[in-house]
Each structure stands twice: as C-alpha cells, then as structure tokens.
Image (cartoon, rainbow, N blue to C red; front, side, top):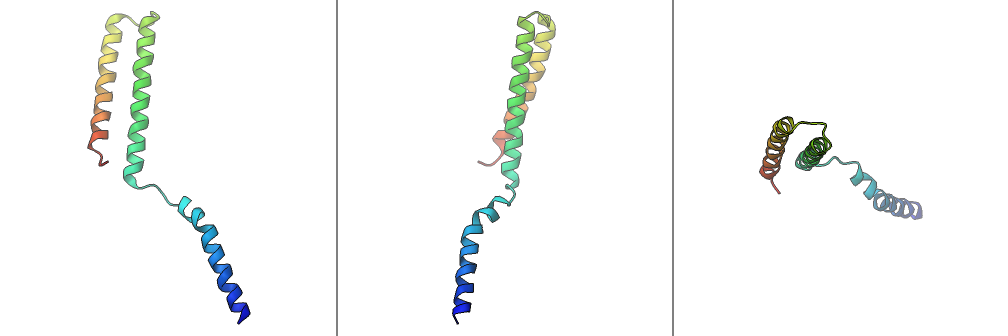
Length: 89
C-alpha cells in the first residue's frame, strides 16, 4: 500500500514539474505565426525605406531614382499593413 502511495505522489510531482515543459513544446497558433511574420516584414520594409532615404541623402541615389524606389517601397508597406489589419486581433 505504501508503495502505491509513493507512486501516486511521484506521478503528481512529475506532472506538476513537467507541465511547463509540455506547454513550451506546443506550436504557436497559425494566426500568431502569421502576425509575427507580417510584423517582421513590416519592420524590414521600414528599414528598406530608411535605407533608401539615407542613400538619397548621401548622394548614392538621384532624386528621380529615390522617388521611384520610395513610392514602390511605401506601396509594399501599405499592403503589409492592410494584411495586418485584416488579421483578427
């Protein structure tokens, strides 16, 4: 009888201690992964816009080239923001 009691207590301890480890192994829901991916894309696009502006200010791009590049990058950023807005919160 004592052996059975020790096994039950040991099983409870293993379940309690192992619970965080079991939760950590689960994957994120698809929506969270999609949101994280879009947020990373948004941040990367913002960096591209800043880099293009820096290239223009340092003379690496002409104003015409910079405006065309900036227009395209901002259009892509708007699309990413719209897709982020469409995700459920």
